[in-house]
Length: 167
Image (cartoon, rainbow, N blue to C red; front, side):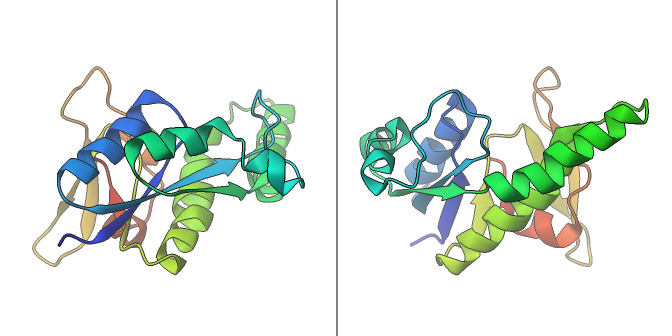
């Protein structure tokens, strides 16, 4: 049997396809959906009954994978939104995705995935990871140049890339 892989499920097509592809490839798949506080729905509250009604849980059932909803609102505000605001106020052009991917997705969410027994964290990003002769992981452009998202992942460390999957 292949290893357990967590998928950061946003609810979009790309992350859901990543989960489907991994399942088809024989991976044990678990989903992690994180709440930033900027979602349009209000399903994540302190009320556990409301959390159990979140639409992403139904999608997980359709896919046949468990999905955990994680609240990262505080971290997202402090590490992403505050960074964006400070940078913008200085007249610079912030890129929140380049900050979020290494600190939230492949920081907080990756740690949580590893705690849950996953060996890798997958996302729906279009990018490629290759190892060199020493085993160090490097990021490359995705196969489809029109959809390539390697730029947004450029700040991931080799260790984070070693734990990443972009199916």
